[in-house]
Structure formats: structure tokens, C-alpha cells
Amino acid sequence: MTYDLGIEGGIVVGSTGQVRQNIYFQDGVVANLTTDRHPARHCRDATELFVLPGMIDGHVHFQDPGDSDREDFVTGSGSAAVGGVTTVIEHTHSHPVRGLPFFQEKLAHTRGRSLVDYGLAAHVWPEDIPHVAGFWHAGIQFFKVFTCTTHGIPAVLPGSMLQLFQAVAGCDALCLVHCEDEFITAESEKRLRQEGRKDYGVLREWRSREAEQVASSTVSLLARLTGARTVIAHVSHPEVLDLVARDRQAGARLWMESCPQYLYFSEDDVLQHGPFRKFTPPARSKADGEELWGRLSAGEITHVSSDHAPSTVAQKEEGLQDIWGCHFGLPGTQTALTMLLNGVNQGRLSLEQVVQLVCENPARLYRMWPRKGNLEVGADADLILVDMSQSVTLKNENMLSKAGWTPYDGLAVQGVPVATYVRGNLVASEGKIVADPGIGQFLPGPGAR
Image (cartoon, rainbow, N blue to C red; front, side, top):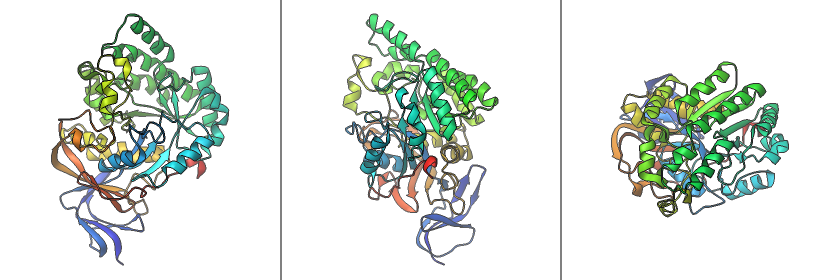
């Protein structure tokens, strides 16, 4: 037969090894992996390249609908595609999805606007807890929960969290929990404002290590007591991993997410760049970052996401004189995979571990496996071609996000995605978008399948 697409001569990478193979696709799925050559309508010579499953970025904020001056689905999914991402799970704080009317509005708005496949997540207010099961069965991928009031979204405190986790366990749903203690952050903010503090050092005192540890410990215990499937979001330092490990070892269904910014940045960067390194939890010490690399390699961190939360340069500059005065967050979906590939070239990880961290483990967590996260026969033809020898200097002007900048501006890295295919469709090549929005399809959550 003649296949739709053939990627020939590349080294195909999975979580357990590498093999030089030709891979052929038909009707948007993997049809054949072989050392033989077969006819195909479109062929790509990948002899000098590695062939990886597309990254699943399970934590992005495209602000659409909402504050779309910062990002929208077209630009956000485009930056993801250029970065080697083929699936995202999106939720926005500027127009949060709270119930079925919000969800239906979001579905209608996003149709035809994405270059990559996408799922949608919802937020939980304490008063929404009785409706969790019905919402899960409507097709949400997970529920985002805050343990401290952030982005105008109220905290879910331990009493309500217990009720929420019981409801989540009852329908086998999933929560992604932002762990910073409400009382510690509130008391710290009160003290710092009374002192008249506006300097960049506010961030590490306000959003302290202790606040993250206390909340993570509480959430992990409640997850163990209830059986709720729970992700600890954006782990910033190793002590959080240590605290949660006891409940994971006791059988809690817990996953540990971290992000490249915690591997590459430190408190020194926050003190130097202020609003352009304002994300929460904030970066910790250089020693913490170094240890996180080791914990990542050891498998203690289950997966990596970008936590793509863009603001424009002008919006960030509102915090130059007063750090309270600008949004949290960094743009990152275009660079997340590249930062891990750079880590491979630095000897910190293997390519197999990268596939596990950004493809296989997220696919299993979000129950997209085996359709997503691998390149076995029958899986979606979501793949990226990676040049591990290519060195580039990351630059603001090459970022496709509406934010228009990257915190890695000026950093030389080695190892980049050079082509991205979504279900067999070439959507990005050599840092540019080569397809129209609408290729990306909505992926209902497992509760609706």
C-alpha cells in the first residue's frame, strides 16, 4: 500500500529505548514501524534527526476567552506547536470555567482556533463542590484547585478540600492543586505591605517555602485519606517532594509536576529581574534547582509542564517600581521541551527520560494513553523531529506568543524541535507555523468517554 506519510531513517525514541526505523502513517495514526521502505505520498528524510512523540503540555493558560491581549488560542497553540507540543490542557484565570454554561461557551469559542489537540480544565470554588461529578462527566480534563486566593480565585481550605476530594474520588476525577497555604501567604502579605515593601525580595517572603510545604503536606494527606487522584502543581523545591513521598508510598494517588523555570532560575534571577521572574511559587535557591534536576532524573518528579502564563512586556513593566503591580506568570510552552533537550545535552537526562516526562506519563495521567504519548501502531500520528546537534540562542523576537518575550532571552541552548506533526499534519517547521488554525481537535476528558 501507499501510506499518507513516511518519516524515514530517523532514530525513534520511546521511554524504554531508541531504534533507527522508518515510521509510516495512515489516516492520522501510526500504521507501521519497520526497517523496510514503503511508498508514501509524502516522505521526510530524518536520517540526522530523532523522532519523538509530541509533547503533552498539561498546564497552559491561553486567556481565551478572557484577557486575550495576553494570549489567545491561535497564538498560544501556535507557540506550543513550534515548541514540539502536540496536545495541551488549557484553563484560564481571566475567564474561569466553573460550570456547564461556562464550559459550553468555551467549547464554542475555541472550535477552529487551535493548531494542536486540546483539552479543557475547570476551576473549583468551594460552593461548586456539589456539582463536581456532573461537571466531570461533561468532559473536563481536571479540576484546578487553589489552596490560597490567587488570580482572584478563592482558596479551597482543608475542610472544603476534604469534601472536594471525597467527591473527586467518587467519580474518579482528577485535581491539579496549586499548593501555597492561604494563612501563611495572607499573613506574609499583610506584614510586607505594612512595612511598605515593594522590592523584588517581596516574592520569596510572600510566597515562601514554608507556605508551599504546609499546603503540599495537607493536600497529599487528604489525597491519601480519600483516594482522590491528585497532582501537586509546579513543585519548586525538593523538600516538597520529600513531604509528599510518605503519602505516595502509603498508596496515595499523587503525581508531582514541575516546570523548566524551577530548573533554570533561582532567587538571584528574581532579585535581578523582578516582574519578569514573577511566578508563584517563585524560584528557590541555586542548590534547590540543581537538586531538582537530580530528582527529575530519579523519577521523583512524575512529569513536566510549562505552566504557560503569558503577560506582555508592558504588563510586566507595571511591576518595575512596585512588585505587587503586575501579573504572575511566564510564557513557556514554546521553550519547555527545548529546555529539557538542552538538559539532555548537558548530561542531566536521557532522551528516553524526556519522553517519559512529557509524553508517556502525561498521557497515562490524563488517560489519553495509548492514543497519545507514544509512537506504537494505532497511536495518533503526533510526533516531533528533533535535532540534538543544533544550537540556537533563544530570542524574544522569535517567540510566537502574544507576550512577545521569553525569560530565556539570550540563552544559548542545544537540542531543538525542527518539525511538529499533529495527527499526521505538519503544523510547524523550523520555528514557523505552516498550517492554519483548526487542525487541533477538542479532546473530551475521560469522564465523558
